[in-house]
Image (cartoon, rainbow, N blue to C red):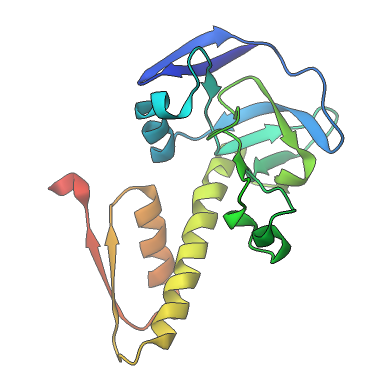
Length: 196
């Protein structure tokens, strides 16, 4: 199959790579339909020598919309795979897992025609335009961020707290939008790095 393989700092190439053929228990081989391009991908690409053992390559892509053969729906990928055994996982803090694997970050991801993924990491959705599913991952991050901002603001003894959003990209825009349409009672300031 074809995949965009990262093989060194700022070195990505469309290559023929082995097609996933065998799924372990609980895994599926999914057909990738759409993949978002994220700042994380850019940062991993720039720092590849620190992440890749010499001679190895990595398939990036963690904002993925895929389909499972013989199923008619589209799925959004939760790329974080926790071990379920460390103390953080036992406490339900799976995003702090000491053995966290992230598809498209430190394991092969979605910049390929097919990908291997845990079935439990695929969430069905229905949009009239399924390509919009690539926004589910950044939107979920923004929702979590706004939840934390609201919880923190409720702890402050300030009548009108100010929240500064640094960056005017997709994530900053989503956080700003969500805060504007939330019960947040303070001021929102934006600082765009692009304008400096």
